[in-house]
Each structure stands twice: as structure tokens, then as C-alpha cells.
Length: 212
Image 1 (cartoon, rainbow, N blue to C red):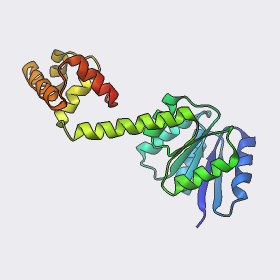
Image 2: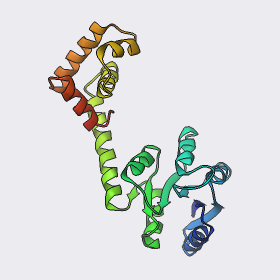
Image 3: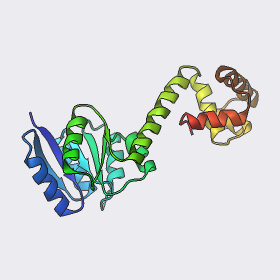
């Protein structure tokens, strides 16, 4: 079975080049070419492709909007971002929204083909040093959050997040519908479990683990 693709980019020449590129490979089938986010979402719903190759910046609905709707709909199609430029923060956001691969348009076309094959097989592919750093940051945060979640209770995690956002005890108590004294007890337990001794240390710890 070929890898079934939908292509989404607002430049017709790029779409044509992509279709030609994958047409030269025996293990790919291009199902649709889309020039904006709305067309991409309609193609996803109609064709249910294996992989969507998506430009980040498009009219009507951009790549982020497409990713958010895909996430909301729990769309199983795997996504490769193909973009001219991308910031580390955008890579992190894209990964959180379910992107599995990121390739810059300046890279060799063979790398895009390899990326799509790897993503279709269940892997991840991120080009460029800054993007790799972003992925490492995301993975470190995920590992850190998993570790902390095994130590703290759900309520303690909620309080730690609020502390990291700079919210004081009284406001935390109001937000969680508990007494300020109970917040202080939870904080004492959090400090003891994490072996830290201050509110500032807890805020720094939470941010380092990606909880803020």
C-alpha cells in the first residue's frame, strides 16, 4: 500500500513541485493539493490520508489553525511541516499540537521524502539545529513532568503550577475553593517531596520542568 498524502501550501509552484517529487517515488500517492487551511481540512475529512504535508503560513486558515482543528477532532493523520522559516517557539507549539516532522524548504528534496517515510513509520524528524534544540526541550519537559507527576498528587501539581505563575496563596485558595491554611499545608508537603525550601525555588523548579 502506498503512503497516501495531502499537500497544503499557498504557492502553486511548490505544490506542483511536491506532487512531481512524490510522483517519482513508487511508495507514495498524492490525493489532493490544497492552497489554504480550509481546503486542507476538507481534504483531510474526505480522503483521510496517512500524512499531511503542511505549510505553516497560509491564507484563510494557517497551519496552526489546521493543527488545532486536527487535534480537537483527534485526526489520526500524521503531519510534516514544510516551511521556509520557523522559530524555536513555533516548533515547540507545533510539537504540542501533534506535528511529527519539521523540514525547511531550503533542505534537499530527498530529506523531505525520507522525513515523510520516517513519520509514516511512526518516527519523528526535525531539521535544523534550533529545531532540534526545541525538540530536546520539549522531550525534557515531558520527561520532567512525568517524573514530577509520579511524586506529587493532582492537587499538589495544580498548586505548583499556580505558584509558578506568581499567584499568591489567598488567590490560589479562592481559585481551588479551599482554605489558605490548606494551601500552606500542600506547599509544605510539596517542598518536602521535592526537597526544596522556598517559593522561589518551587517556581524555578516548575518552570524548568515545563509546568508554567
